[in-house]
Image 1: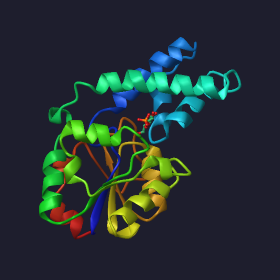
Image 2: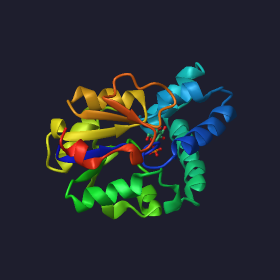
Image 3: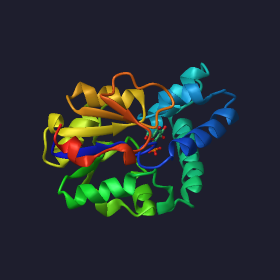
Amino acid sequence: MKGFVFDLDGVITDTAKYHYEAWKELADQLGISIDLKFNEQLKGISRMDSLERILAHGNKQSAYMQEEKEAFAAQKNEAYVQLLQNLTPADLLPGVAEFLKEAKAKKMPCAIASASKNAPFILEKLGVIDLFDAIVDPATLTKGKPDPEIFVKAAESIGIKPEEAIGFEDAQAGIAGIKACGMYAIGVLADEPLTQADRTVHSLAELNMDELIAL
Ligand code: XGP
């Protein structure tokens, strides 16, 4: 193995809960009820696609003009960014800082494959942006997870083939995308069983990097 590819929300830090909080506030305002089970469907997909899924869930997919939808998405993002203000390096999930530092010492490149446009901001706040060699720009993507596009681009961005990379994900759609391009998939901290993952762990602290490199 020659490099690592990470999802952000729910893998590097637990921001998935803040996305849910901000989406739920908007959904409530629109008279649409969402719960944690429904929220699983929003993991790994873009802001506008997430909004469309919420509207479809409430049978309101045709109720709003494009400008109104964009205003809703912006409102959700403002609420979400507010929730991120107090993020510090203490919010890294267990084992993440140690894993990234070891990867750097062993010259194993690391890339972020997240649908979130907030990824660089979050990585700055967590104090780990310099430990990543590349962050895929979600604006360049044509399809969301479970399509493998983002993972293929992430491997490319660190100069390796997908089958030479290990991908980390907390959501079913992400694991499916990782597997669809031939990467080795590690499921992290999942609320639901990640059936397609090659391995699942509660935290990155459980992993031995030399064993991973030798896979
Ligand atoms: P951004 C976010 C979506 O809003 C959210 O619904 C997804 O779960 C998340 O990306 C996936 O990581 O995108 O609003 O932070 O750009």
